[in-house]
Image 1 (cartoon, rainbow, N blue to C red):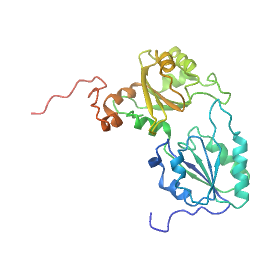
Image 2 (image 1 turned 90 degrees about the vertical axis):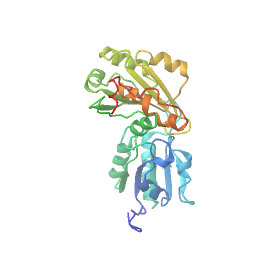
Image 3 (image 1 turned 135 degrees about the vertical axis):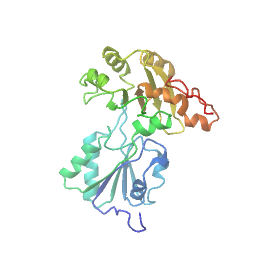
Length: 277
């Protein structure tokens, strides 16, 4: 974009911005531009502190983190806080982990702002369900594996899994990417097995995705509950169910950077091509 053509964050506006899955380098340039202009930055628990280092020196930083099972601000209170700052003439940046419109309640916050006549701009971010798995060496689509992928939350508005049509979800997509699924993993696993997914189907659990603390557990649908308990991994996590998990055997690029060799040059078991003369 030519110099001087970057969008201006005006007083009384709220920009709703995705900060990406964790690695500060995955923040978009529009996000960086917003950080440098905002008077007030209302940020979530999943936003890395190093990202906030790019904020304008005079910016007010307001923590509004929401973490499952822990004391946190109510969603409506967060939304109305944005309204109050905008009405006070502040240039407001709402910074959310991942993408604000992918299981991030960004749509709810934007609705509240519009209902209160506050102008908004939406800045998408890299969702953890794509970027986080990519850092683990797992592509959510691969031509030899799947022609569909479904992104699903691990719980509904009531905090349970029962309102989701797991039978349709299971049968309708070759690869499933589950957000916020660790708490109810036993229920989710039962739903998927009852729907006919095989117990030996590969599963990966990626915690603290794209950060230096990232960990990856590779297991199967039949073993995931026991393996998770033994691993002592904790949220936040992305869970991937499907044969694309096998691609990690050759695409674990972070392992390669650490000097590890690929475990299997043909993880899908198709047979290697004949050598060229």
